[in-house]
Length: 329
Ligand code: HEM
Image (cartoon, rainbow, N blue to C red; front, top):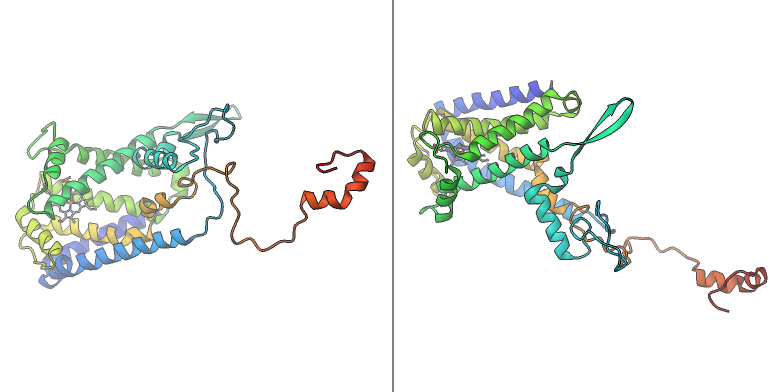
């Protein structure tokens, strides 16, 4: 049901793109007004959610870890898994963000002969990484539409991405990789009954929307070329605040834009915000120095405590009579 509704939602967007293409007024809306509105919603929404998370109190160090904490000098520690200083945290975060380290350790549990058996599960890590890296490369390559002259590194990135020179125009490796990644992520939700059970509208919608963006992009590049000069004029118009309506760029381009703007608006209110959230995750971004420093919750209500010292003072005589060990004689 969730898959069907998200599929219908994407279909409605496709039809909306047809409307945008055929009416001059709507084309103006899509290429001049909506880009700024969508960008504003994306930025404000993104910043709002990050600020909300940043304001959440984290009085204690709560890193989740599988490694040995720093303690006595002769106990071997795991400085990356259980960092005790800022550099360790930076290393741990970098591995998490660039290589999805915790996902690499993903395990699958199965009941075999009535016993739970744990097994390594690397496919999600592999295709997840493939998808995210290729998305990043594609977005960076797209900067060629927004910058004139095109920066050298963008050209180099594109050249590297099309290194194998397969087909004309060259098939980018990132395009093939993102298709593989997206297909895996979608099929995984469809094939596994457990995942189907927990998948929500937003899970399918995000995947189908990105698939829509990628699909229309690939069709434009390889089968129904868009007028790239018009596209570049329009994109430069956006960034120089002198927007122009492109002429005859083709239906697929309007679909591409429609999907991209919907993605931008949807982004801050969806799970896709893990992009910003991962940096604010207290189980990842805190050094585990619990044994080196005493962290006291600043919101603790004042409590009247009876320290051991006071206890001993109170019961010293009785303790002495009972032969109990004392700190002070
Ligand atoms: C989330 C943002 C976007 C994603 C993920 C995306 C994805 C893609 C992909 C995968 C392709 C296939 C070819 C390639 O990889 O270069 C493509 C092509 C294309 N995209 Fe996008 N796109 C995005 C945003 C945009 C925007 C904002 C524009 C408008 C300036 C745009 C314009 C185009 C054009 C004109 C092509 C065809 C390029 C060619 O023929 O070489 N895209 N897009």
